[in-house]
Image (cartoon, rainbow, N blue to C red; front, side):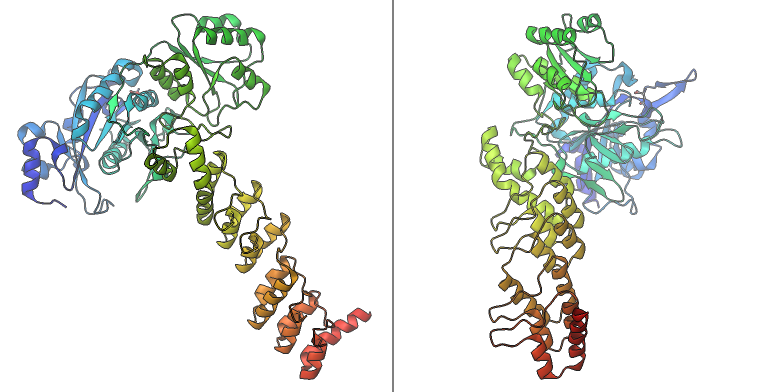
Length: 618
Ligand code: ASN
């Protein structure tokens, strides 16, 4: 993997890993504290200075000693480490080995002791070394990791490189530590996958930092991202969900905003909460409150409470409503929720408390913004922290295509983007349907996409799902109101696609949803005649399931049965007869299926016709 020993030496001599191109990735590790580097003193875990790097050097995956002895200077050996190269580590050849530098904070902290000053320090460190590294790993205690990651996501403006927070539940020096896996995974991803986000890596998943909560104090899967799938899954392969990666809309340089407003609080509503308690929260110098309400954003519909909220909001306190539920978002579907909205409270959608607090601190500290702008921005998706489409609003940031087209066309206003969406969404919906990607379909639908929208050929997602036999997608579309009646430019509805694909299950689903064959009888008859010619009994059965009339006649007055008898197709004849085909229909030449059978002296077929005659007589 090494390009050449010479190149490596040059890199090390420069002592600036960021300047070297080639098969190495450069990662800066900011070690702030937390269990990962703790040891026991007097029976309790405490962060210990200067032990992490020496101990890492004794763990071969974290330190390739042979390489270091050969290429690192004595000075560099102090804090430069290199991930071990291993032929069987599952890394593909395009994954680079990682040279990393560890900077230990002083003092090292249990994360419960961290605050805004520490967040700013991390932000400043990233800023000052930004150009020299491919990515950043922050070793941090788990207790407040979601708070720090949320805060950093806002403090880092126009971030273009990965910043991955990680830590552990068991110190890295212990045999069963989860820290080794979390740390090595973070290093490899930070060095190799340019995800321009603040992330949390834990238990083989990497989440968007501002979507995380610490959900478990004892299990190794300590984090969850209840309203969003992980961005990276660390299995045999490293799978990045690229379309979900959030990217800054501004084509500006990376910068950090390190001031955060401290005057915010989290108020969790509970049954019977008194007005005095609520009033106490809203006393100066408070500037922002995250209100955690019941379910989909409801609070007691009490005049006294609403008055306090309204008064505070009128003074200029920004109040953001989020749910107490772990999963889901606030909405205004209940009168109790709507009353909050009317009192000037901003919907926080599906933000976590950690993200809502961090965002409020960030927005309130933006002195250059007016109060109106601050309020407006609290309701906007700034760093992928919230889903702004819950109430049918538009959030198209997730869709790379729209984002890049919007950028290319220099579109920025909501109206312009809405127009772009109108023209692109149908194709995105059809493409998701073709792939059977229900998740994306749902996202598109929730963001205002018309599930029955047509493409240039008049085809809908349902046409496409039927054509591609995507059973689940057909079910999803039907259950979300997709029309079974839309005809494309050939006059085909989705049922024709399903028949064409001979997918009996899909045909049944469509028929159950009210689909009917859209063709005129003459076209149906011609099709049936040609199917008989092709001896395709299965296709005939599919047409039957779709509700076809086997007595439809073509331009010569002939039915499928005429053709079946003439062609001596015994099985098909039998099937047609058993399914309502009449043998007495005369074509324009006066011939019936029966007369053909007699002329051809086809005994078996005559028997079938005879039997049917007999049963008719009974
Ligand atoms: N108390 C520790 C901390 O947050 C917990 C941990 O890291 N697992 O620093």
